[in-house]
Length: 258
Image (cartoon, rainbow, N blue to C red; front, side, top):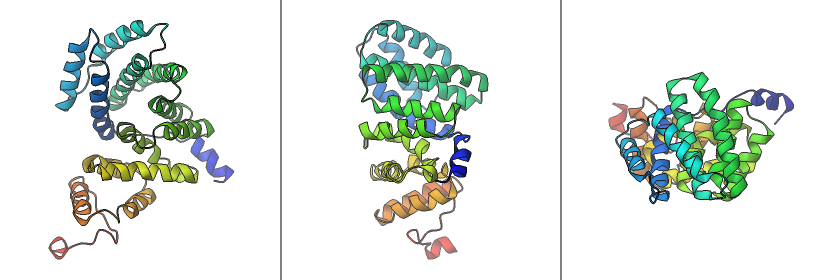
């Protein structure tokens, strides 16, 4: 990457669409619910998971009360499970602010995410989601640069193929694909391939839609080895979102041409 390119990228925040956030946070919430099933506020978490599964949004005021309680439980403890729960709640609160377009709330929530991520990593340095949260916060506040690359590298080092992390990481990393070192580029493509391989095709299409045009072509290249029926379903979901796919591995049938 040239110094001019690096300078431009450093000022460019990595963004993630609300649709992608909705999809991946459903998965994250279910993992979160399972991991804290023994806590005294379990009914509240069950309600939240139920709302998520119906496609509803979290109530930020309720989440603020929960995160305060969890944070109190975690005070002074090196408990990765508790620390992870605090981070996941803070990420949900940040995404609520993002979806609402509330810039002031985002400015308030971002430091909370950073603080929760650093506390989790300080207690358990191998927590991939903690490094990924730092990557997101860094790119949102300071833009893309060496620190962001370092955080993303650590996330991949500790969870290269962990699906619930990949669902959150892929859209963030692929937004910066053209500016990543070669190894990270390959790892971001592996995320996408794993998501397609797990047949999370609606989410894969949303991730595809959120990437730059040049990166979309690379993602389609990676799908050439997929069975034809998988590519057909992917194309159908893409068409439902108003996307036209033109690629040698996605030939147009006679019925589609007519």
